[in-house]
Amino acid sequence: MKTFLALVLALWPLAAAGASAAPDCATPVSVPAPLDGPLQPMNRVQDLRIVLESCRRDGEAEVLATRRMTVDGEDLFLAVDPERLTTRLERAACWTCAQTSVEAQAQIRFIRAAERYSRAPGKALPAGATWLDNAGLTAGRGGAFLTGDLCPSRRPLDRAFLKSLEQSGVATPIALSISGVWAQQHPEDFAWLRREKAEGRLDIAFVNHSFHHPYRPAIADAHNFLLVPGVDMNEEILDVERLLIANGEVPSVFFRFPGLISDRASMGAVREAWLIPVGADAWLALTEAAPPGAIILVHPNGNEPFGLDVYGRLRREGRLPKPFRPLVEAP
Ligand SMILES: [Zn+2]
Image (cartoon, rainbow, N blue to C red):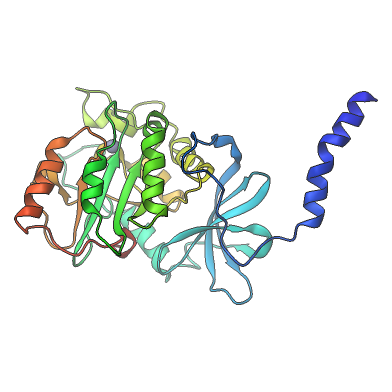
């Protein structure tokens, strides 16, 4: 009896809240997560799963849902703007959604890009090679698309580099490929990035860089990064999204393979998750130049200072294509 009473008392506030609160449909969901606190636990986000649904509601343009989930007990979905490729979280209760398919959405920019780039072959490899190098979206048109990878690192975030990108009055677009392990290693740097974004200095798109970002020195690419045996691609993808959402951020539609190395199977998993794989035609530490429309790759995680030196030199010499544009404009 005592247990039963305790249960009733424990559930009472939930039932009361559920009955009285009409969902706020006017604005997208902002999951509360303080900008100066510790990392929020990923288990705030439950039952995150991949879907492809077309969602409508009065007075709003149609969106595609690519994920459903429960956050702090409320049913949400990840909404993708089908033409602009931007993402936001919406309350399931506010929309009417129906399952859809690639065929039904074949003319939509988002689906065209996801399909096209997850089938892009990447750099030419030796005959018989089983892996792919730099496959996916590697360039846009006009200006440049700055991307920075946050692979696991013992070194701190290079905040000075990121501050050097900032300009008065307008947020500088940058796509940061985040690995879950990096965020766990550097919660204060992650919070700092969130603040630069929230306060309008950096227009950050968070690109999924896999949760664990496996890497073994001196192992051939064919067996390294996400091609290490035993990797669960779905877990690698969804756990980064859970971490981002639990911490008040929204995943973008992009995925960057660690080392830019993929294979048919891992690329298939990215395609089935409705993500656009992003390579780079200007990995500055290797290319030391960036053509117009380049997707530029640097590492602000402290692991590759040479690439940042190259960036600084190109910038001083006026040899960086301008302006920097949001990655959603590249596909
Ligand atoms: Zn990486």
